[in-house]
Amino acid sequence: MRKTREKAGEGGKGKGPRLPPSPTDLAGIEAALEEARRAASIGEVPVGAAVLRDGTMVVCAHNETVGRRDPTAHAELLAVQRALSLLQTDRLGDCTLYVTLEPCAQCAGAIVLAKVGRVVFGAYDPKAGMVGSLGDVLRHPGLNHRVEVIGGVEEEECGALLRAFFGERR
Image (cartoon, rainbow, N blue to C red):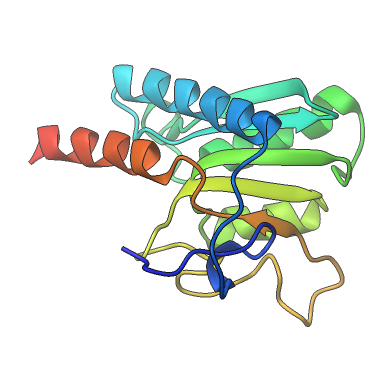
């Protein structure tokens, strides 16, 4: 568990206390948590995502790797794809992606390519997280798009959902 928390926008790289999340960010994470619970109820790893634009829900998604037999069907990737399709665009610069678990390399790459404006995530992923834990794809200085990141929002609740899911399977 991290002892130092980040400032808003600094993900896992902050040097000071974390600012409290906004009501919109809390609502976005709660929508993602609801999707994660839905995933767990059907035997999927409980990761959920939501895309909001101007505080309005655009899409929600949860992991579908088991049901689709597709290891790439992660919640945030599906949410980004659905938002792009629904909004009929190839960029999500005016959107915020909320996800219950720190994005992996695949999802971080998709977030950069879709030029998502902000990412707010719950639990850190020390084994696969690429938004501060193992690396930082979203804010890599060599890329032409860097994403604003806020990590650790409702971290305990997001992490507890994952721990409970895997605890039942061991």
